[in-house]
Length: 271
Image (tube, rainbow, N blue to C red; front, side, top):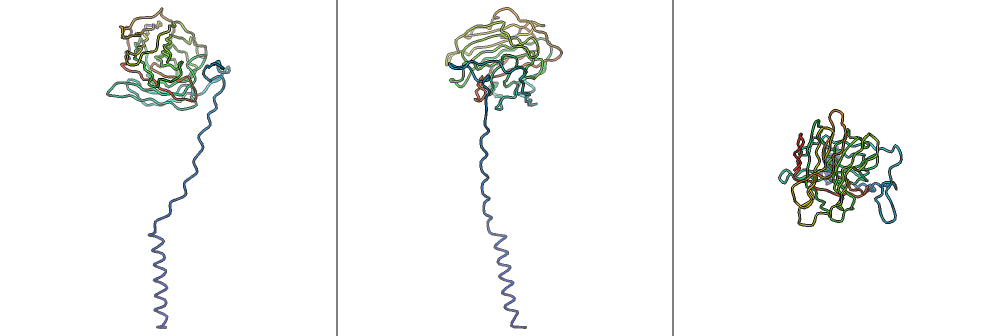
């Protein structure tokens, strides 16, 4: 029996050494998971932007997508939304030092009987004045992209609304959707040259006085002045009011910057 003890001790020692090696040796890195393929984006033909070989048309009758709502404050605004559930999510940021709002979106349009755009909003009642300098940081963006100052009865894509927009190509208009699900109609339309590099940006404004809405503009740095006659639209109860941006190209994100924003719960303050 005495002769077995050294051998048994050797076996135990080898077993302990093996166990120690298993628990202290660095674990081999797990094999990386295969990369997920990028999601496929299929843009319906009606949502493609106009081109030399294509004309954008209204969506199919009754077409809607749910709006994605974010209860995230942004500067003066209490929430945000990707109205109309664009194929790609939008984004927004506020620079506290510069007081600038940067809105990004890939979205087909704010027109016809439904909209897609990034919206920074606040629920309000009564009279309102809004104004902002508008710039487009990406010079080569689509000419029909548009930054908007907008009033909407709700956050659905087909909401009753009135808005003023400045397009990348310089077009400015005031437009009304008089009823939920109806088509937007222009009440004021003017063509301005895009802001020159290094020059003053186009300044856009809208005022609500009762049921009357007026368009205010400054094209070359001059004091803001009213453009055209007021448009009429009646809202019920509190409504959503704020700033928005639409790239007009549903699978490509673009950006607008709005600065020197006036947002006051009274008429007569667009400046």
